[in-house]
Length: 222
Image: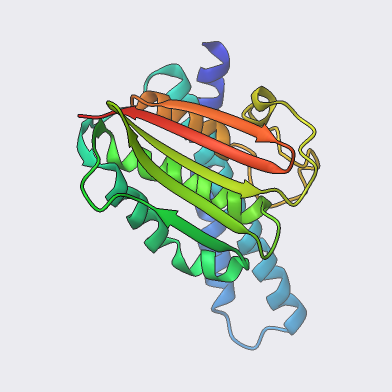
């Protein structure tokens, strides 16, 4: 409990000075007649401060959901429509990734009771994860099926690195699949997706088979 409170408080306290840094970096970028090397410095400052902003937000969101303090707005939503909307909103990122997305969702509604905004974040994080860690030129499969009284969403991709870890390790906070932590992400994407899925009333499972990485989300139909 103390650790969660510490993370929450530190994340909150960092937001105010970081907002000032981002604002002043933006003002500097609008100055005229700056040397090129100064413009480069400002660009890097802006990029790194925005990365820090996202990391702080991820920390804040994860600590809130783990502590059970996150507010949930549970209602009937169409899971298939939510998946298609997420893919549509991420169309540019998907196009730049060099990956082929094969999505298969039922035409008829797939009603579940969940928090649409939180579940949108789940699929956004999972798709971003595949864009980062899939082998270039491979296919990513996103399937939604109805089995009995359950809706099962599956995301499958071929990893661009050797997955020498267990299913439990990959969702530990700050654990990265490549274990190098050299990328731009916070390493919290899967942990947030797992905890948000559970808070949304679903089941979250990861299956690793060689280079095949699969995430399975299961919800009760409404």
